[in-house]
Each structure stands twice: as C-alpha cells, then as structure tokens.
Amino acid sequence: MSLFRDDGIVLRTQKLGEADRIITLLTRGHGRVRAVARGVRRTKSKFGARLEPFSHVDVQFFARGSELVGRSLPLCTQTETINPYGRGIVGDYARYTAGTAMLETAERFTDHEGEPNVQQYLLLVGALRTLASGAHAPGLVLDAFLLRSLSVGGYAPSFDDCARCGLPGPNRFFSVAAGGCVCGDCRVPGSVVPSPEALRLLAALLTGDWTTADAAEPRHTREGSGLVSAYLHWHLERGLRSLRYVEKD
Image (cartoon, rainbow, N blue to C red; front, side, top):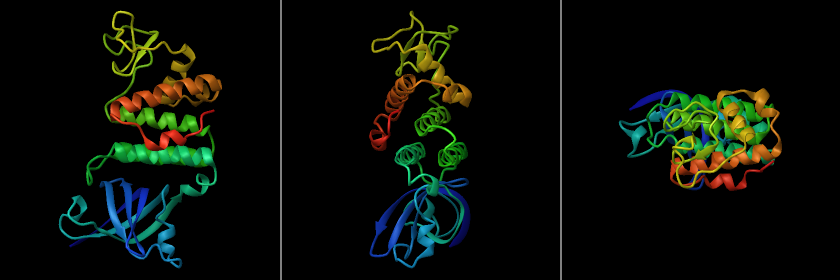
C-alpha cells in the first residue's frame, strides 16, 4: 500500500455507482492515471467541484500494489486546485469545443497508463492556459496544440522542405501520408496544393509565431485547420469525435 502525489489535468470523468466517479487525469510524473473519487457526486461535495474536466489539480492517490497500471484503480484521497482553467473555458462555446478536443487528443497520445509523458503534459497545461485567457482565437490555439502534440508523438509535419527527400522549400504539394510538404518528384497520389498562406500559418502555429498566426485571414485559417485535421486523422488512424463540434472561423 502506498500514497503518492502528483499534479495533473482532469481529462474526463465517468459515473461510478450512486455517488462516485472515475477520474482520468494526465499527470506530470505518472502519465495518464485513472482513479476513483468517492462521494464526489453528492451535492455537498467540495472535493468533486475540483475534479472537473479542464481543472489543473494537485492530487494525492492511495494505491495498493500494482493498482496504478491496471487491476483495480487507486483512490483520490485529497485534491487542491492549482488553476481552474474551466472557468475561462466552459462558458464560451468556441473555447469549450476546442478545449474538449485538446483533452481527447492528450488522452489519445498517452496510450499506456502510468508511463510519464512530461512533454504532452506541459503542452496541455500551456494550451489550456492560453485558451482560458482568450489571448488568441480558440481554433488557432487548438491547431497549434494538435501540431505540437503530433510533433511530440514523432509525427512532426514539414511545411517547407520536402518531407521525403529534403529538397529546400517552399514546396507546393502536401501529403498527409508523406509527412507534409513534398516536391514535384516526391509527389504521391492524393497530394493537395494548399495556398502558401495556409502553409505559412501552420508553420507559425508549430513554432509559436503568434504574430503571423493572429494576422491570418479566416479563409486561410479554415484551410489550415482542414490540413491539420486530415494529418491528425491519418496518424491516429481514426478522427477525434470532438473535432466535429469545433467552430470554424
């Protein structure tokens, strides 16, 4: 039997019995963790209000043996709020749907429970902080997060040099299967020809150039989002359910 603490983002919750919930969190030190929070669905439970999606929390867990990785679930015994990002997200449809897609993405990119994924955790914390602040359009924040999550997962797209032969860009063709921009010689069936502005926007989102990203026209933003969605779908092998609800500028 052991107690351990970690800070994490609540990804989702599931009802359990009459008053309990299963809480899924992405934590800094233990990766994705599922744990039982007892009594949190009772109306007088202050503990439950802290364990809602988008919340950044410091949680104490109680586990027996190998509970963290499977046979039964650890218990959430204490929790303290670090940042209630949900306050700046859930009241706005565009922010809420973008944030929900971020949470689903983070869960999909952390397949194995108990395995630390600090980069994905830090990406999610930063993205939710930015989304809640309203500093940038929700769709741009989401696309930036998706691109960086893909990069952390080993699927970094190229928006300039040829993804196959390395020919310096700009290259006009784009193939999700090939890994991004490709030259005329490396072009494969199914390649598309995006506008140069959409490719510059995606490159800016990947590198954090918000001056360029914020200045993008809505038509290029929509085009870029379509490329990101297709690229993500290809590498995850199935799309995100929550993406269908995201507002398009």
